[in-house]
Amino acid sequence: MAARTNTAHAALATLGLERFADEAATVLEKAPVAEIVSFLERQTAERTASVLRRLTPDRAARILAALGDPATRRLLRALEPNRAAHLLSRLDPQERDACLATVDEGLAQELRALAEYPHDSAGGLMDPRITTFRPDATVRDVVRRLRTFRRRRVQDVFVVDPDDRLLGCVSLQEVVLAPSNTSLNAIMRTPTPSVAATAPQDEVVAELERHRITSLPVLDFDGRVLGVLRQDELLTAAQEKATADAVTMVGASKDERALSPPLFAVRKRLPWLLVNLLTAFLAASVVGLFEATIATYTALAVLLPVVAGQSGNTGAQALAVTMRGLALREVRVRQWLRVVLKEIAAGAGNGVAVALTTSVAVYFWSGSVGLGLVIGISMVLSMTLAGLAGAAIPMILTALRQDPAQSSSIILTTVTDVAGFFSFLGIATALSGML
Image 1 (cartoon, rainbow, N blue to C red):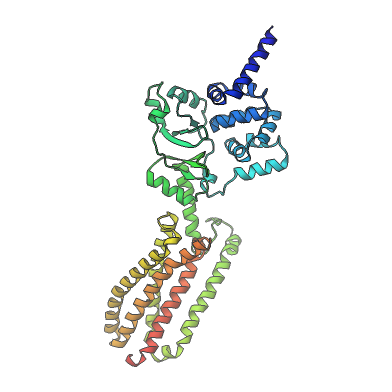
Image 2 (image 1 turned 135 degrees about the vertical axis):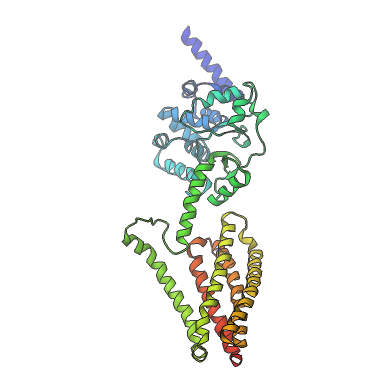
């Protein structure tokens, strides 16, 4: 008699699962994982997949990890690859490997590839173990669930619809202070700031700073929640990237450390030093073009570093501001003309002010009006070109999908040296009658 009763209960449960899937998922959402697993292991893979599609991703992932190997194998084959990868990404590495070991190697490799994101993207930095709830869940339900996550740090609770699309957010403080029978729909904040999984790290940092929030949900292209980014962990990663950029800008390797072996440092630095040597010869060849002028007017050799130094500083300022704008997503490549024109105007304005000061100083030093005029004109011209180069070089490298931090500095040094030398010596040659 008992066996017949159990069979009848199982048949009724299966019928309810087929005809009232959404209602069944609501009931299973609050049931213990062990009971859900015991029930689903007696269902077909298609029915199990239908249930997991309707549960919150965190709940579905815990169930997937608890299923036996045969049920796991059938379920991973029945689920859409993107959804299966989404659930697997929420598991610990050991649990994920155990699930993937139940399927053939081809499917396992496909799911691994779908679950991975570039290490410096939002998807690569996020914690996939995010806790999500339906809008009709009460504060009592939330607190009961959160108590089972003793090792998980929770700052915000995210609310999703039946398709796992983000609806809103509730801070943990609001959950604790609200009456136990309050639904999340009544206290959640909308809209909630979020970021795409493919967003670069710099964009994520800018988003956190813009909204002054402690955690940021990561979404896929369909708006489904994949994970969460926490501010302290992200800022640590941003600091590491900033120090790496500072190192690569001068031709060193981001992998080099202060106590790295000397041979490692030589191997990483030498290629860029050789490139820098070639650019130095290029600048020297420009000076060689005006050897006769320098031999006739030796004062030009004394003043040559002044022009080159000012243009180099101007270019470095424009480069730093432009790279910061690109890093924080304040500007995009499509705004290149506006950025370049601004730096040209700034370079020209500073050039005029510096040129007036320099011309007066050179006149009192040399007693030559012509020499003061030459250095003044060349200062304005070289600093204007330096501003143009400082803004254009990182924009061009970014448009070419190259890291502007890797070689901008070396390219800029070459441009400013050549521009400074050529403008000063060229104008001096043209106005030699006044010297």
